[in-house]
Structure formats: C-alpha cells, structure tokens
Image (cartoon, rainbow, N blue to C red; front, side):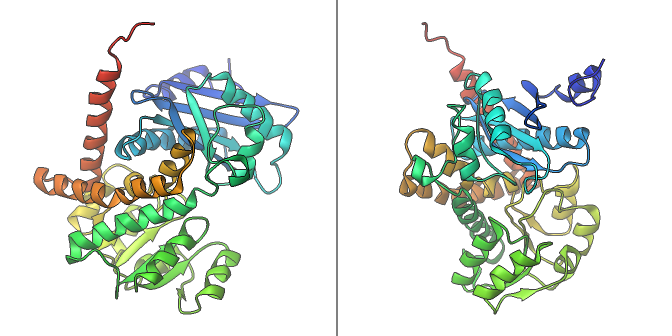
Length: 365
C-alpha cells in the first residue's frame, strides 16, 4: 500500500521517526503536491518557510523537508524565539507550475493543522505568494507590507549573516570587521546580493559566482568592482579569506573542504554540511565554521516578529544579537573542545529541553 506520492507506509513511518508530524498534501485539480514536516513544538508552534522546487523525486523532497524542518527547530531555539521547527516543500517548478489555485489549496492544508505550523517564504516563494496562501489560512507570515507584513525576509537574513561573519572575524582576526578581507559569495540571489552590499560597505573585497547569469549581472551592474568566477569549485579553490555559501544546501562536501583556502565559512544557505563529520574536517583544517542555522536566522526573526505586529526596528535589534550568539557558540566550542556546529546543537537542545519542560507545567483551563 502506498501514500499519495508512491512512498510505502513503512518508508514514510521510518522517515517520521524524529519528527512530531509529517503531512503529505495532494490536490489533483490544482496540481499541488506538498509535504509539511513538523520537527518539534517544545518551544511553541512550528515556524518555517515553504520551498517551491522541482525535486527529482518525492523521496528527495521528503529528505529535504525533514532536514530543513529540523534545522528550523534549532534555528528558532537559538534565535531566542518561542517557536518550534517546521518546514514545507511544494514539488514543481515555480516558474511554470505555480498558480493561485495551488497556493490556496496549500493554504487550506496549512489551516487544517490548526496553528501547529506557521508558514512563510523560502526558495521559490515570495511575500506575494504568502498573501494568496493567507486568503485560505490564518497561520501565514512573511506577507507583503501592503497586507501588514514584513515584506522580503532576505533583508534581515543577509543582515544576520553579516553579523555572524563579523563575529567570526572577531574570533579569527581579533576585529569585528571584514575590511581588507577577500570574501567569496556563492549564490547572489535573494540573500547573497544583499550580503554583498553589507560586505562592500564594510570595506571587504568580494568575489562571486552563481548559476544564474542574470543574478551575477545584477550585482556587477551595481558594483563593477566585484570579481566573478565561473562556478563554486573555482570559488572555493580561490585565494579567499571567507567563504559564504548562499545557494542551496550541502555546499560543504569532503572535496570542498579539502580544497578550501578560506579561514572562515559563514553563509546564508541552509544545511551547508553535506554529511555528519564535515564539521570535524573543517575544524581539523583550522577553518572556523559559523553554524548556518545560527547566522541565517535573521529572516525567521523578521517573519516571527510579524506574528505580533511587525516592527522593523524591533526585529533588526533582535537580529543584531546574532553577533553575540555566534561568539558565545565559539566560546563554548573552545571550552568544550568540540566543533562550533556541535556547540550550537548542544546550546539549542539545552534551550528546547529546559524551556520545553517549563511549558509542560499544567496551567489549567
């Protein structure tokens, strides 16, 4: 017997082992095929974006949403939010498959969860899409300014990555500045091109790459001083001080780490480590890794603020704290003799455990 995507119930059950809930959503008329994964609600309802992507298979989509939702649980915990971790993926090409009926059908599936999951933007979705989802659902954030939302969450995502990079520079070079450093940015889309702006303002030298020629040209038109290399392999082999992966996940493979010349890895992409053990390889080579879900949490801070009535000043002030959190993780890593990724996980799990226990205290009806 199979589920809606042809996965056996046995496989689906095994995939859910570490998650509270995984929901398969299908609406044949609109073409919707989606998966919503809720990893942990110890701190509150799950919050995480909706990724619209042409996955090669349903199994690939499931693997991605499970990893992303776990990352959101840890990200929200270290961002100091009273929110758990969740994520959703819609299978398809957003350029050709996205339509109003599909987004509204998706909204009804989110609504059916009764507030256990708040959705927002991610790769392939935008604030305008969230406005459409919200026509069928009360649990939507990351909406347009015209509808009372925060707008594009990449604004504070890039700002937060920059704060994490400043903390990394402080730890390695003794100064919280990238002035005079050569930073390689892989992926100059929503987040990457904004990160380039922060780096240039700080006096860094920037080199970029992207699979999209249009994205590269947009940066080069505004900043002709930015250098361009052919691809990610050329970038990671280049003579750079900082490597900032800002495209899709799994950028840090065994091969990437082996050829990397940078002293710092700090970027906006989710799930940068291709597999367990890469964090130790980085540490063994003397490369400081700023855990991705820590430094890229500015976006979720921005959309989470929207839930209580958005204030950019308040959200930006909270995102500024990413600098202190990143430094704290580096200190713990040094004290405990573990890679920063391990230290970050421990800190997040400690908060989920301690605060989750408090929230279990019965308050009555």
